[in-house]
Length: 135
Image 1: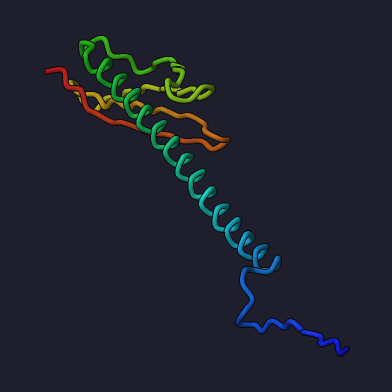
Image 2 (image 1 turned 135 degrees about the vertical axis):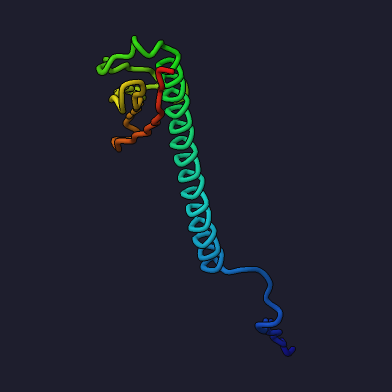
């Protein structure tokens, strides 16, 4: 009795699926792409927070400038105390607002409102300037 051995051989064409190395490389490429996307989202959120704080600082300085301009010309002072205003958007951020006036003539003054704040250890500042006339 003769035993015939049947040898099963698979050619490269007949193989299906991915090897473990191919799967690991694909996962590594996908993780690198997702980390890049996550970094972009973090940067976008930080930039948005900076812009919101800047907008709030402009609103604070505009409000203080309008309050100063509403005073009668004779009651304008050359020195005002620094006002500290807490941010409504970010906890822990305080706006320091300074108002200065300087005479431009007999019946007009230059009003300057500077609002400064610190966000993530970096100083920021916005400034509004206007002229108030005694007429």
